[in-house]
Length: 351
Image 1 (spheres, one colour):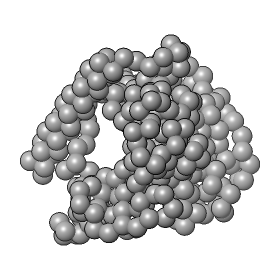
Image 2 (tube, helix red, strand yellow):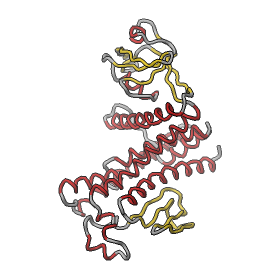
Image 3 (tube, one colour):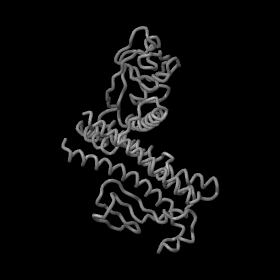
Image 4 (cartoon, helix red, strand yellow):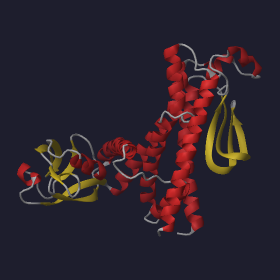
């Protein structure tokens, strides 16, 4: 795949993620009566645009992002007297004049739609290519799996109710050395649960059942694909959060990808076909949704935190404190981006 094709693939993936995120803000704002002045894909000068009703829809020159511009979103909360300075806008339709819950709902709808997008894409892949299935390839003698009655060709659905991703199944086995776990399997079309106790293995520093697993795709109909797509969205979210926590706690090496790394990963994934790219896009959508929910000022999660504090206090946070918190948030994100870019350069130099 050429560099140009890789970059185009990245722009398509990134634009889809941003479009759904901003569309979440858009439909939420409309539903609670906030005036949306502009809904745009991209930044900078507009290539073209048009009005539908009161909202201007635009495609802009720089295709790296997008925005949903709501009337009054830069005002101080509850500053109704300023509303009349915004020509032609009913004060009750300004973002910051809306009740706290309406503002929180509007902000949270962006990340929420990223999770919806991820589920839709997972379902599309699983219905087309088949449901990803973890199958027991071999069972070692005198290990917990054999003693518990797990057999070759059993399909593992979940561990302690968590699955169905390969990573999460291994993670739950590894984390429960010496503790009983419930292994939900499918055998000859019948679902059953087997209790087993993973044995600690110092080589992997965690628990093992004494089985080797394979990952395969089996067509099982739309309803199973739908259920698995939703489960995969949830399990991917859990896996990402656990991974972040382990990096913070120093249990695993910090490893994040910046813009260069993402472009490279999109290009590599696209080489394996459209379904692989769709699957990767779904995972990115989960990551984007989670990232934006972090309680860091300037992110959606930061605004939700501000509004939650306002709701508890009965009055907004002072502008000076909010500005300082946003400055700290920007600094943290810049540091993260610098670190991610450094990791990207390190990866490229090792190729």
